[in-house]
Length: 332
Image 1 (tube, helix red, strand yellow):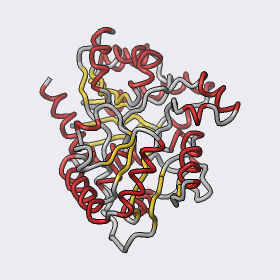
Image 2: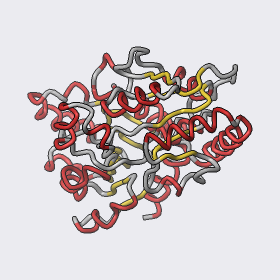
Image 3: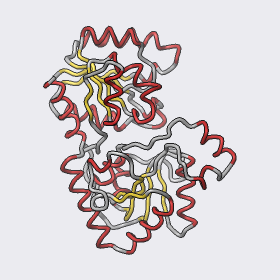
């Protein structure tokens, strides 16, 4: 299939933050690996509001030049006009991967979903919402691990507990509380003292950590956090992202050989056996309990790690996801 892939090239469209590795390595390279002819249209340079008219014109011109069988979008915000999407839909098969339906269906997805031939959602609970806005061609998929990246060699454990992800007030508070309770946690990513890490380094951290934390950046209702400062209290009433969701990290950690300790989110048990392939906590106190338990019980910890790793390798790479999505589009 000839595919025009429309996405940001850099993380949040900011070159200084490095490549958008999920879009580049997870989606684009996987489409190529699946033997599709892929052309790219990166729209980072058009994020400036003064360039939105140029974006519409240049994307349409690119689509008419490439004349692909499928235009595969990953929308960021509202950069593409409804007129542009409708014009492309009238001439080509179009699809968008909607990332955050758990918390922005009503403010974002419902506006754009009717203007694609197909929509992909990572939230199975939103399918009926798509139907309500007139979009019947909905495909449920999920994030995955980038199976383009090599598995890291195990050279022994360097960290008791680690976290990889951007700074967020709740994440800072959570990790600080664990440290106060005697748990040594190393944090990596944009905004942390350890700084951002490459995808290769990230995967190595997963494998060399006895326990890998997966911390949400959605609204926390833990009263201890909410009242930890006046600033946090104000943010609590302003933050719109109040539902946790499955993320790529849920699959990346076990795929690259790490044990995952994560907040439970709806649907996670569709992909992993809770307690056997992934460990879940409901709050800070339970996370402390589980961390201290599994740090002292190596055999149990290794059994969960190994089972999670095997399941992720078997079912949760981007090749698995995108092959099924494209087969579903062909079928329909």
